[in-house]
Length: 318
Image 1 (cartoon, helix red, strand yellow):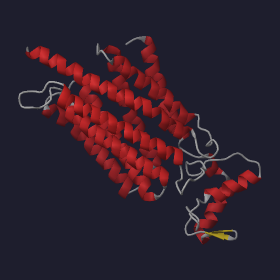
Image 2 (tube, rainbow, N blue to C red):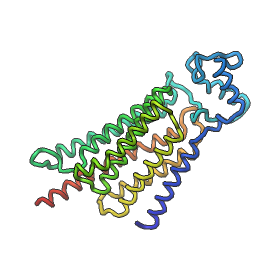
Image 3 (tube, helix red, strand yellow):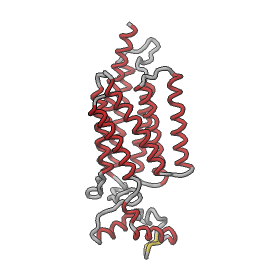
Image 4 (tube, one colour):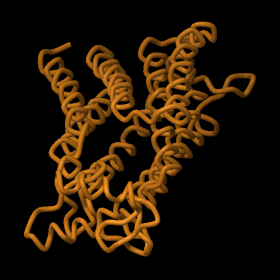
């Protein structure tokens, strides 16, 4: 692998770990006045003359952070994050309308990519005598597509209304997708084709991911632990794809590089975070926007890979 490629992999890994450190706490949470405010709310259900159904939402459905941010605005202070979230302007009760719209667009991109892949491998490319596809990874990409669409669906729901159940469904869906993506990366990069070998790769990772999801949902929702697990799985698969892109002679390896590099640069949006512009567009929403073209290119690579492997297998048979 060339020196520039190695440098990028190191840079991207450092970027992810920096992101983990940044997300560990929110500046607003450390404000002594805010801490005292929350403590009073938790003990009495009221803050000064205002009372709340519970300490997350007010009786009119507005987040408790909203009135607190209004006090900051009156004092001429900049917006601050509370519980890891910026204050947003709602539209028809939707908490983060731009992120919801972009999550929905990503869902549509995943669906379009999956359908185009399905049509290609089943109706446009040659099939085996038993009517199965020549491409060895067809089933894996189908599962990947379903998990991706599920993750973006719950991302939309979570950004619409941040409550305990939607948060857990969003996180659990993302972890499941990340875990399966790692399995798929290992199998494709190392060309694992036999069922026995695939089970040996998948079984321990599936057990680990399942245990982690159950732990978060039914024992303790540990944000720090979850961040470490997700960063570890993310770094490993990024390294696998990056190294493979550097050594393979795949005709569409450039698309893989664009996705890897583009994903790394997009990660900077989460590090250099900023308050939502006009109360609507923050860095996380922009990150959602970058994943739209990257998803399109990713599915383009998958289709190219299916054509490449199908042609190679047919030539081998002949």
